[in-house]
Length: 329
Image 1 (cartoon, rainbow, N blue to C red):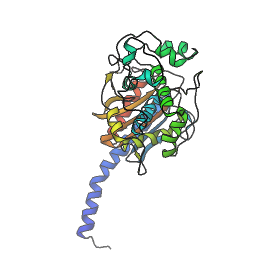
Image 2 (image 1 turned 60 degrees about the vertical axis):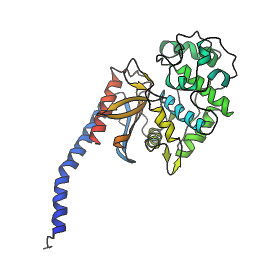
Image 3 (image 1 turned 120 degrees about the vertical axis):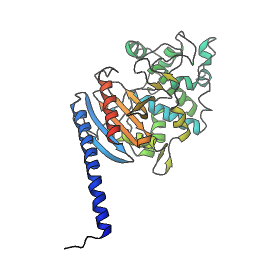
């Protein structure tokens, strides 16, 4: 019989003490997985901690390796591209005025004060083009002009108006100041460094790629974007997005009247299990969330053809993400 040394005894005792905690963590993750699978709108759910996948499931939908439309999570991706554009000198910063960047004459009203930062935080003072107004906007002959020619409803920097159209204006700004289309920028600045695929998506009548909607990638690629952000914008030793930009993007600048969460530059700001979290959200329940204090990235894809209201399915997703953050604590 092997002699029980003091070291062996200490190891055995520690393992015995650790086993219940490990079992509790495993049971908690199993419960999260079961809860995720029970949501009939959910296609995939991934929970990654410190680069290690804790949960990766796709109870329905095309799976983790097939392209999925991330809808308005595109706004979060566009915010990342804007930070890179600032870092590379294409934009002087979020305070730069929008109309001159697009070669437009002064409007003689509140629109002249509109900045890139106002576009990023959806505090433009312009009417929304989302919800019931989305159809008329995308059927117009000039999507950028449709947004910028609209009569202001307030001054930039006040209020919060959810609008994909103002993000499309931001996408046009990036294309104009760099001399490259948005797909080329997103491919070179985000997709290639992360080694992910980014298919082409919708364009407006002038050829500008839609800013703020309809971008697509695999669920695994979406999680990889989140992991890059969680690591302060770094991926495999390369600084993809400036860390200072991510910090600035997570500063509260507005508040959503629907969820009650704060909003920064393309990120909603909330708490999950009592700790700070930032997330991008798309129609139907597409979510990319980062919980820095827990080292977590959460990526969710859902049926893109069904709504996900804050008091319905999206509320279920927030509770699921909070349970996941608790299980990973």
